[in-house]
Amino acid sequence: MQTIVLEEPYEFVPPVYSWFWPRVLQFVVPGHLRRTFGVTSIETRGVERLRAVLDAGESVLLAPNHSRLSDPMTFNALARQAGCFPHAMASWHLFKESRLNCFLLRRVGAFSVYREGLDRRSIDTAVDILTLGKRPLIVFAEGAISRHNDELMPLMDGLAFIARTAARRREKQGAAAGVSVLPVAIRYFFRGDLAASVLPVVEEIEAHFSWHPQRDKGLVERLRQIGQALLSLKEIEYVGYARHGDFYERVDQLLRDVLAQLEAQWGLKDRNEGIVARVKAIRSAIVPQLIDGATPPARKEDFRKQLAACYYLQQMSHYPRDYVRLSKPNIVEHVLETVERFEEDFTDRARPHPPLHAVLQVGEPVRVESRRERGVDEDPVMAAVRGQLSAMLRKLSEEAARI
Image (cartoon, rainbow, N blue to C red; front, side):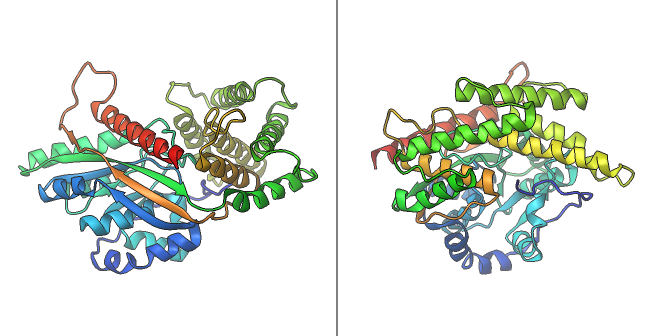
């Protein structure tokens, strides 16, 4: 399990407001992307839209999808071409991984956001950046890494709140231009030998199950067996036995059962906001008790088990239905992503699989009004962002299928 929840009181980590460091570090990022994430090339599309909005004096919020840890650093290429240095919201745990990581993140303009509660300082910082309008702001509205290129998770409405608050402030200050949100679709293309890259990982996972290498079966069939085995292990852990039936129905049932149990234990209601939002609400209830010095050790251990359940449930919810299929040709990246997810979920690490080519597609600007229209169920800003991201990802997926 990745360490994304820390057992210590949260302290906001502000950005470094510097023009020097982003200029210096932009020459370091490409090598880091290659070594750490296997991203060997980046292509930008629609960068003229970003330039036009910046030239018009608009304050810019960039709203990308979030499928990989490397996503924030791919913006280095877009920033260089547009002549800007964005700030970015980043999960607090990333700043705590090492002093070097914290040093670099702050100096490229990142600041922390607390995923386990309401982080007013982070929101205020984001609003201040947009109100000032000197540098764009990157917000990953999905709220978690999806691990899939072509499927968009539900978006968090906090993006629209931040943008609208800044628009209102700029309006009061008499700014000549307002706030625009630019959706950015990030899509990775694998340009290597798929079998050579993933089969060693597959056989390593099979060995963890004490299986003989299943070389008499096709790659997709082996992945389906691994998926069934991993699900059965989680069913045994959380309900006491492995269930039977359709794989995805079993996943959905396990999510319903365990989330409902946790929500009942913490007095929470399912507000039909998606798995990520429900998991966040549960973690927000658990963490204050976990870091409370008066909590007995036995209770803390129970809380850790609940947080682990939250982590795995969220990971399971990110597996799209029929992403990898036996009966039809599969998109190469879908197979690669599935192997990476299995490796990360089972071994807590995901080795890079180069060469990856990243495409960043900038959408049309969405102008943010200072007031939200009443009587409309869905926020128009979020609807526009979601619609553009979905359309751009769909076209990029079709492009991948033709390769």
